[in-house]
Image (cartoon, rainbow, N blue to C red; front, side, top):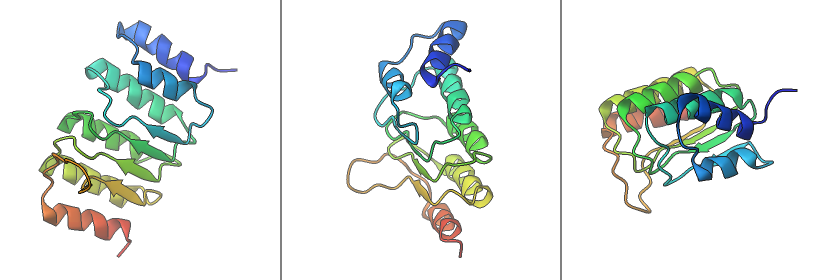
Length: 149
């Protein structure tokens, strides 16, 4: 039997010499692996984000992922989309308040076009402060793709 997500995460942190994130430990130890709410939780440096991507890829039941408020870079979003395009179960991706710009918007449009299981890409929450600056044209294209128009 393989390692659970928590043990896999701890082993990856040791391998990359990263300090484990306590919120991730709680999430990966939970029985419900269909929803990961990692909102407002600094994921960490480059290696830590790569580890998270490995775990997203390994979680074949993940349906909802919230990485809002995590200071994601354009490169982080591109790598995340690369992992989510072939993901077999992801339906909802929330990336509010990450200072996303045009390039991240284009990558998220690619996700909407290539993974038809994705029905929500939430990057424009108006109920709280939101630093995303994806152009309205790209937001509209993402909405149209998700509505399958």
